[in-house]
Picture 1 (cartoon, protein in one colour):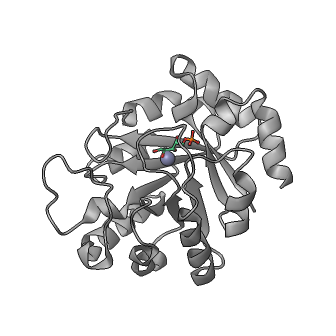
Picture 2 (cartoon, rainbow, N blue to C red):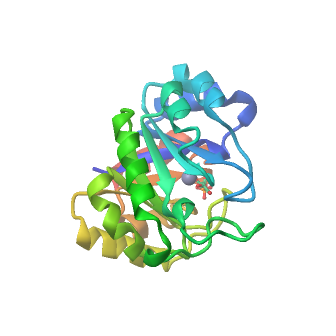
Length: 233
Ligand code: DX5
Ligand code: ZN
């Protein structure tokens, strides 16, 4: 089943609660919450207090996407605030110390990932009672994900460089979705970035089934219609 995850990054932040309620009413399956620390990505959003404040506005799945250098520092606080799923980036678990000022989302390779730490983090998320997810940025090869497949409920393939909404989908990232779908026929594969009416069909055809839409949903003329079109595909 295909699931729509409406990303609040594109909504009217001055009316967040209402916008989240609207997304649920219009038929979004998940609410996608982008957590950015100004270090892993060059942008800053919100923390657990924000999630707690908007939690009463909808009952649907809160899909928290952690674009931060140390995702486990605040994971428990996000769980307490009402997250249902927490997705962490493999690039947050590099072995090589990253030079100051280097964004954390640059390419990482299998040898460069501290899998002991990454797998421990994913297991810890499950212990905390949320669905663990793992993400890779566009420059990171899909092979990086393979060792964590037994420990996740979802893999998020970034289809734009993380950090900002409203970017154009990078078509090559869909090759990773196709490979991953071959490896894991039943896995929830989420795609995030640049998905709208004109790119949706190709992301579904590639094998993704959890689709993040920020601009494509919240800035649509009629978000309910956008959700209807989504669910009819
Ligand atoms: C980008 C975020 C996305 C973003 C997608 O770093 O992870 O969730 O909101 O926005 P759109 O759908 O506008 O590309
Ligand atoms: Zn996201």
